[in-house]
Image (tube, rainbow, N blue to C red; front, side, top):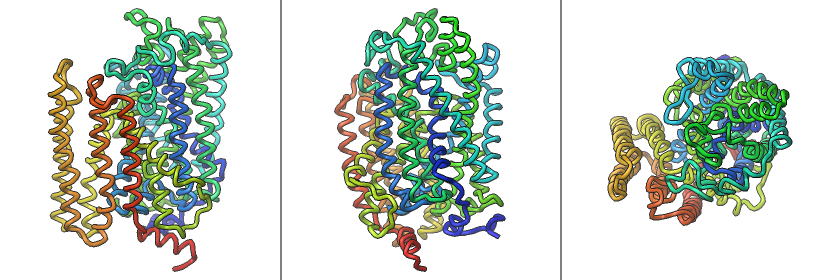
Length: 639
């Protein structure tokens, strides 16, 4: 009966999910999610921000994410649960930290299908000037979709929905075929560019490894800081985030304990090699006469001009067809046409996966009890039906306020990576609270790898800059009030009137504070005294402190005993958010620019120390939850 959609518990629903995915399937789910729109746009975006040092940014970003991936490898093997990344915080720290991180992860997952659909349509606009004017336009130097473009992107989302609707086996096998294609096309592309168009001058001249004519120069983000800023802000981390798919689909794998960790490592290693070589080939093959608008006064070596140049809507297509035209090689032009085909296949393949990811995120959050149980309801193909419907609707919504790949990529990257702080924390917490948990994979050197994984996630969050952090935290605290208005009332026995008042007040003050900060910090006119900006931030931060602490303290005083333990175990997360926000404003990646009191690299050192402190505070706060107790008993075969 459950297969036809009857309501079931999370534990029953987990068991009903089909176990169809092989090692190849889940490895390619990870790799297929990694090689999407990132390979089409991120090389140009990273070069515009960091110049040739973008190559190092791909390597550094890959290594940092590898540490996070290793932490999740053990978690995924020990507790293979569909929607696992949003469930692990609940297993280790209870519902308060679990809800905040779960909603944050949902924010990131629900936006990816939209950005992949946008990427496909944006690349199609590169075919000719008619298609370009029909599907895209330019606003403030950024390529965005027109209404017809948004309409086509909407149709793509509907296609993603129906492939996911018909079951995990259809999704897995469809994606495996698509991913073979997605491996071949980027590989041949970088081979062609390296063999025919490579010019070492682009690495040695025009400012060398760390040029000054980059997009963040006016804010003082140049040199090594620009290289680090490129990691979260230009699509580098966004591309690597696909490693999580083996964890998300673990509950539907044939042998998750063995295959999930291997799939994570395989996907990330292949991705680091492919993306690094794509970046090298892109920079080496830049022809400045065609890549930027010389007629507008830009000079060769102005890396920042790439983002508004003729290639911005189709970087590799523009580069390889230009190379074919200037050298008279027709084969390169034909390969460029094939890239336009791939521009539909690669992002669509990734969007297809992420509709499934968002579905399983809804499922995981409902399994934790944060959302209504109907999100656990399965259709006849054993797919969470209302979760997938919600994923489609939210994909439609995010097409409207963010009609551009370049505008949305930083938001997604920061929101996702912020949740990844739980990889290292969860690993070390469970080593402490559940030593009897069966682990098919037991990570060697976990006491070292775990804090490094936490620091890696926090540094990426910090390097994204104050502005992106502001947008993510504002969006987060649109969702947190639901904790008080729904979960705390139903599960923690908070008085219903108190819960509704707390939630509504938190939401209203969050919106008012966000507007104040936007007007007085983010969009101040040039020449505004630094002292005025700092004063505005102090007022804003005091208000932000209030919307975090006041509901938390009132709720803590009025919930039941279990609720007190849950909220107390999440106080470290509130502290981390507040401290990182302060460093982000006063550091070298904040709005004060060259006047920042904590310049680079001292700001990064400070963020590292903060990450280490809060890692151990979080591990100390963890406890053996009822869910972990149940999982251990289940492993032992007890009732």
